[in-house]
Image (tube, rainbow, N blue to C red; front, side):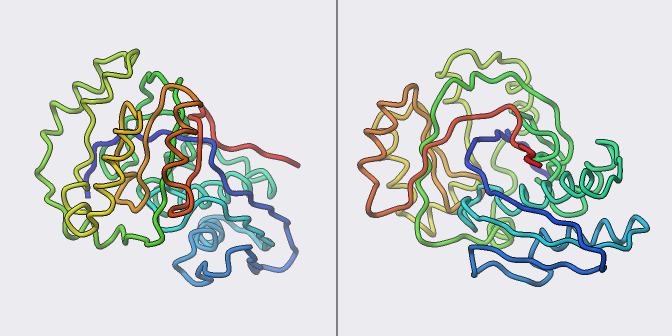
Length: 263
């Protein structure tokens, strides 16, 4: 599926520990016992992709401390896959160039290359064609995560793909300096029409975020997470109070680069 979107990294993160082992196998552990341990697991697929493309006779122990909600449209699995590629490139001394890492990432998922690139980008194609854009990121993000997940595959199968005039949208995204928060009102998420129809509670959350002081609110990707953008921390904390107890909530800030390596 071709998309036109803005990807923005935030400081909500998972922690991944990697340890090289001499035998060609993967030992995967996580604090989240619901994660798959088969081909659905992007961490495992990332390791196997390296094995397929390079003459490697070593394996890895992976411990994933999961903080990013699963199935919420926040790119947690994709970011994990990117970190495996970046981490093993260092750990195994592969010396792969960024272009090679981006190609590998594109084999794992349409938004995985973004987590190699980082920051704020306009993404087109399947998500692998990226160009940095300037965005006023001096805001706070309030994430509201309901108890249910939404299948990305299902969402793409049912969305009306002709909702937005992509050429006009791309022109707008490239032309604006994004210096004013009012510019965000020009953004929209085509998934909302479909998702809100099937999950009306998410539409209610959006209204509550806007009524609670957010200058912009939207579904994240194909959901299920909703987010509101706020000009200051006090307003974010006040709005968060309205949702605590009923939903998982997170406060985050945009970042220019979302990968931190600790030896």
